[in-house]
Image 1 (tube, protein in one colour):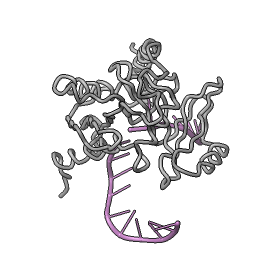
Image 2 (cartoon, protein in one colour; image 1 turned 180 degrees about the horizontal axis):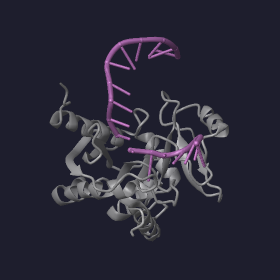
Image 3 (tube, chains in turn cyan, green, brown; image 1 turned 90 degrees about the vertical axis):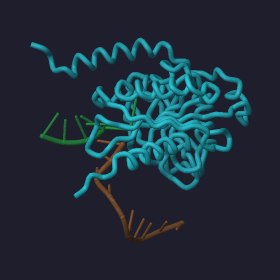
Image 4 (tube, protein in one colour; image 1 turned 30 degrees about the vertical axis):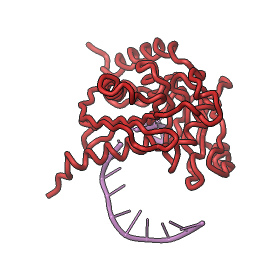
Length: 252
DNA sequence: GCGACAG
DNA sequence: ATCTTGTCGC
């Protein structure tokens, strides 16, 4: 009698995205975002989830807060969580957001003075099928400025990884160079950024919430020691470390 | 059937 | 996301 479960779920999720989408603030809202050296910015956050091999249900949700501009670790929180929602492209937020939000809420409860002034999210923001990726979702629900940084290009709204895209990547000569990811509509949904001199493979930056695209790109570059911005990289490293420690490889 | 598919 | 160490190159 019932339709395939995923179909109804996806429709429900689509309408929820459309509703929350209206709450995204696409521009700069903070004073530090408007000055060249980001003076006034002292804490940047990063979130990530790591999984145990062969297990897509149990994961470690990680939050880190780093000092800015030194990028030293000020706070870290690892929490094992049980994921219920499936991963469906375009709906990553429904799988991950609840647990990332809980991490931020624990911090607000226990050490509110350490709350980050901006959060880097592993995934896209407005650069998304319906312009509402994980970074927007977490931004709206937390109310915090968020930046989406994806390691792989999502082919959406007319943005393709074709020869044109490849040649644009080749033209990125040094860290900080970027080019726009423009939708068929003409709207710039994000930017491909060469985040440091060493890596020729760009990262894909887009607005999550309460920040402009240009500011997001500039800030991302300023937080990169390696290809992936330090807050996300630290969150990734620490969550994997946590899993290694608490769930050692179950070999013979 | 083929290709795409953030994490 | 994860499977995977050393290795070739700058």
